[in-house]
Image (cartoon, rainbow, N blue to C red; front, side, top):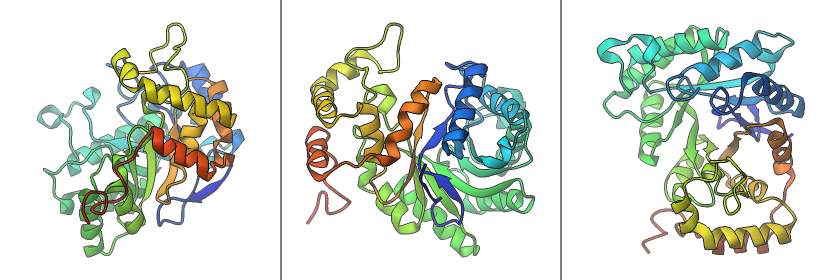
Length: 326
């Protein structure tokens, strides 16, 4: 495994991040334990979750599974750089009129306590805002984060689904308080979703914010089974999306066959090439899928291959404003 710093922090994380969204929803607890053990054994130390994961009507179940895995001991908790998120509705928090999406100080405190309880730990290394909330001031947000930092309940602040302007605003307000601010931004980025190249990725790179790519296989479309889905599988998205992208997926399949690697691993390796990228999130449903993804950090995509990928999956044309203005 290879490691890098998380943004401009001094925290080192693996260049693959284990995503746990399937745990409790599509992956049972026994298999989830196997996957997490195998991830640690392979050198993956970066685990990502969220308080809302677990399946419809079962928010928090994924964190509970991770907590029970930690409770087995054996240094599991000590070896993991743990990231979770808050923003959405958590029915068991009994928030009354405040039981809505958002980033209020009230919500941060209550939902952090809930996550720590479910995860069976006294802190998380990275506490992420799952979405932007422009109804809450940065004075309120950063003050709430300061309290949690001083209490030792979190190590660093991160964001997810922020626009470039939100990253800039967050860091500007943090600098006014002489604080580090965000160390990471979790953002959708894949060969089929290259819009972040316009604003978000350049902003993150300039601000020293490490990007964590979610859905780097675009909901399974780039995973290799979209054109010939496995029986009972729904991981390749809806048929309309497959039909829309069929020519691209067929060309991608041909490229992968000639390159001698799976479509999924090429797509993951491609995300790692951007200088702002810390790690793509891999979300294996089985231990076998995890083991297949481990070679990604060692795949080298040569110039001709990258040119063909650009032809198959055109980007926005570069960074803004050069991509659309002189």
